Every structure is written in structure tokens, then in C-alpha cells.
Length: 630
Image 1 (spheres, rainbow, N blue to C red):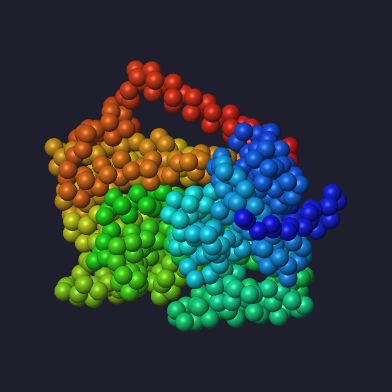
Image 2 (image 1 turned 90 degrees about the horizontal axis):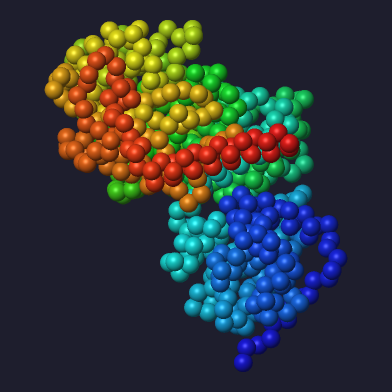
């Protein structure tokens, strides 16, 4: 017989602290993309709060009059039990009761199982602590990230992964762009209230992340000045070790007497949010920091002011895959921004080599230049969290430097001042990925100047990928440059991106793949392509993944085609209107001028696309209406 488990029955009255915990739990579950609606009233709902779960006859049969703080429906027959307590000292008690509720379901029901149990303890002032356990082989085992207990709630994909593998260890946590957007928006609001200027916000958060990486227990106590000294000293340590102290002096926290107290309070609250999101662990396995920083820059208008069109991670991934980046490549980005292309290259190499080889690749084969010092600092921090703090990012205009080998036989790249570059310096860069600043009115250098500079660094037969405004490839102003480009180099492929890929910046853009040193033969075919759907959509002023869609799946076929063509000259079956192989005709080099029409006569496909477009437009209009009301 099963032993009876004594569980404290909740009184009908709810204390203020418990009520606040409900709000906090709901917001954090929503942050992890759970539908927090009541399943009794919403078929898509996944979260019961207190006695709502007792409407379910099978749960009521198991629990009687008892009910946990929340019961989450992972699947129709798989549940997750959450129990909350006031004050962090009561975490063990919350865990014990959550397990007891789950065990009652597991031992009583023949239809339901509750393999997950979570204890939550704390309050709004001191923050909350979360611990989750998974039942396997009759024992409750903590859910972990590497060696440490998971300090936050599970996302639904994580819960499903644990169930599928029957393994509670989450080695590579993932944070969706939707979650990154919500987190960055929340933190932006905190810094706005603290009267922090837009261009400083991303760096402040980056410094906090560095300080937390050195000391996860970091928090404000009594004196705000001591708190700032703690943050600065921990973050500075990383820059000094990497030989980047001059860069640190450019960005260190220097609050004024008027902003000291408000900013300290805001940073203390932000630290709690960063810990809860567990962004430090996620940063070690993906370019989540790049997305995180870019949300501050992109939606705070800072990137527009700097002339930066920040590259979405799906485009960075596409470029690294198509260029087939490998550990013996030398990668250069002359407009590095927050480091998206370098991170994508590092990710691709590190997935197939040892950690030591990956670090060696980052240290000796990844190079970039960024004119904006504050943005370069973000790239440095981004790379630091990917396992390398000693990469080669120069803060200056790329036009002042050449990246070459020191002699005709040298294979080790280094930066030389343009006027002091050895005449016999070898071109050792094998692959270039870039998204040059889209020209501002007062800029002397235009996008073609960046292409010319990059090609000058590239070794013979090397490949270059660049994002460019479409106007560069059809306006008459650039016709002489286009002719000269094709006289010296081969256009391998050109891809039109979705019109809103750089949203909220409205720019019609294309991606071009060039091979250096081989004049374009008039008989040579080019791969012309168009991406209509990269798996993202606009929602409440941001661009996030559609639910259940991954950009690698959406772009996979195109990447396969581009890679086969760029690397080996192999064609795969074309898809009229979306990717085709054609010779250059006329002076324009944009895909729209060379692609055939899409198969609009396919009514089933037409209706599907029409429904998707209409649904997207209606959702966006509703989000704008809701945002206006709030």
C-alpha cells in the first residue's frame, strides 16, 4: 500500500505575499512561452492556478481538496506541479510539498502522471528562488544545467526534451528570440525610468552580465557606491586579462550623484531578471547575447543613429553555412557590429572540434573592425561568453587598416596600418562576412567602398558574403562600379531577403556571394534566390519566431542549394520564382530581375499563402491596437 502523504490544506484566504507570488509565477511561465490561460475555459490554456485544477475530475480524484499553487498541463496526461512559499528560507518546504502533490497524482491516477515538481520561494523585495525536480526510476532528481541546479522555470521544449530523453540534465539551454525581446523590453523600461540614455543601456546590461559571470551572488546591500564598485571591479578584471583595459575605460559605469540611487535600484532589479532568465548559461551555447544586445540597439534607435543595420542571427547562420566555415579558415568582418558573423563562424567550427581547437580558431582566425567603440565592446563581451576573450577586434575605421600576412609566405594574419602595409604582404583571409553600415547622408564611404576594401584583404579564390541595400545593384549611380566588380570577380549568387528582415529599419536588402580574382564570364550562371519566409513575424513592434517554427528549417533548402553551388558548382533542382540558375542579363544584379514568376497558378499554395499573410496582418493590427490601449 502507498503511504498516505500529509499535505497542508490551504485556507480560503490568500495572503498578500502568496498573491504576489502568483503574479510572479504567471509572468515567468509566460516568459517561457507557456499559455497561462485556464485550461477549463481555454482549450489552449496550460496553467491551472490553485483550485482551478480541481475542475478536472481525474486531478480532483487524486488530490481531493488539496491543490498546489499551480498545475501545468505539459500534455493531456502529463502534468507539472508548482508550490510556492513566502521567503527564500522556505524553499525546501515548497519543494517537499510540490513533490508530495505530484506523488499523490502518480500513485493514485491511472490516467495522469506528474513527473515534474517545482518549489518556489521568496517575495518581490528579495526575489524568488526556483528548483525543479524530475521523477525517474521512482526517485526525484534535480533538473540541472551542467553541474548546477536549474534556477528558473522550464520552457515547454525543455520539458519535452527531458521527457523524451528521460534525462533531467539540460546541457545546452535555449532562449527564444521572443523571450529575449520580452526580457530586453522589460530591462529597457527599468533603465528608462532610471533616466539612462538609450545608447548606454546595452552596455550597462553587458557589464552586469560580466560582473555576474565573476560573482553570481552579486546584489546591492546598503551603499549604492559600494554596489557600483563591486560591479566595475568584477567586469574590469575580464577586460584587463584580455589586454583591453583601454576599451574598459571607454564603457565603465560612472553614475552621477543625481542618478546613483535610482540606477543602483534599477540594476539590482535587473540582476534578478537576468538570473531568472539564466541568460549566462544560454550565452555559452548560442548567440543569445547578440540578439539580446541588438534588441537594445535596434529598438532604441541607437543603431539607426550609428548607421548600423544589425544582422539577424538567421542571416549570420545562413552565411556561415553557405561559406562552409572550417577551422583552417581565416574569417574577417570589416563592420563587425556586435559580432554576429564571428559568433556564427565560431559556433559552426566549435560544433565539430575540441574546445581547445575552437579557442585556437577564435584567437587566431577571427578578425573584425568596428568604428563605434561602444558597439565593439559589445562584440568583445559577446565573444567572451562564447569562450574567448582575446579575439582580434580593432576599434577604428576599417579603411585605415589592412589584414594581411607579414610576408609573401606568411599565413598568420595581422593588422597593418594602411600606409605601412608591407608591399609583399600575403592575402591570407579565406572568407569574409559583412553587413556594412547603410550609408548616412554625410558618410564619405559608401557600401561599395566596403566591398572593395574587403576584396582587397581576401585571398585569391576566396568567398565573400555581404548584405547590401538593393539600390546598390540597380541604381545607375553604381553602374560603373558594378561593371568593374564583374571585370575582376565572379558573382556566385544573390539572395533577396524578406522586406521586414531588418525591422524596424525599412530597407530592401539583398545578400551577395562573390568569388575573388575570377572575372565573371558572360556564360556563367548565377544562383538567384528569394526568401519570402524566414520563420519570423512582427509582433508588438518586434520580430520574433513563429510558434513551432525554426529558421534553420525554413532556410534549410535554400542553404543546401547555395552551399552546393558556392562550394562545388553543383546545381540542385530549381524552384521557379524562388531560386533559379540564370546568366546575368542587363545591368541590374538584383534577383527580381532574373527570377521567373512563382507558381501562382497552384491554387492550394495561393490560398495557403493568402491565409498566412492575412493572419499575419490581422495579428499585427490587433497587437498595435492592444499596445495603444495599454
